[in-house]
Image (tube, rainbow, N blue to C red; front, side):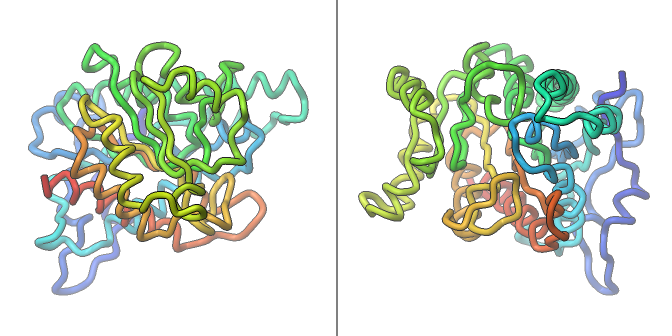
Length: 344
């Protein structure tokens, strides 16, 4: 079964907004030529970073969320490629791979209704199909010695990304996640709310650090899991930083980073965390875009990062018109993470 939609040079050119006497990142990036032997070709390139999209929202809908997360990848890539290629960041160290092939499962999912118990279970089975495709591609990217930057889809994709990394290095990793929710819900069939609990249960992830969690949007049973397993599970809360002001943003972030910095680490951010960004669970009270960028940069700089995953952005939510600023914000986050890695 096809897992990857590989991008051509023509695809990248069509997404890059060129201008006379300027060089855009899209004009410098590496694009692979061989669909059959792309893994071998990738391993031989000198790039450090690989861009990959996951244009799906099945996991979000299977968790009773609003659809739209499938729309984040293309505007994010468009914005990223159309940035200036200069001394601060250029495209020569970056490969644009393509996106996970999900057309077939997305088409099937559109006929399913979450209000029907049987159809809800079918949606969750479709998420498992996506899991297989994502973990397969991520394993190959990590095995080639590159760092994937993954955009789009629900936070269900954290599980196959973590699994793919773990299989590639043959050991578990740590993960940090900036998110109002822990996404550590019960193992009740795959959806966007239990990617990390599945990864932890199946021993692909050892330590899990949640940054700026919202206190009233996580169940008592999940919080109890973190208390019982506090040697492996840790969170800081949004309210402790911004409402009670018991610690600064920087101190809280450094504490979260310290919990996962002694081992290969995955870096995650849910765009639900950022104030008024269109997402599956848009918040009116979150961190600012600048703070999200600081998070991406500091995680890149301070951690032995294996990947960066930007989840749940929905420039075109199922119930509103498109928001063109979201793609640009995602592009900033991608750039900041890369700069953090480069500034070590």
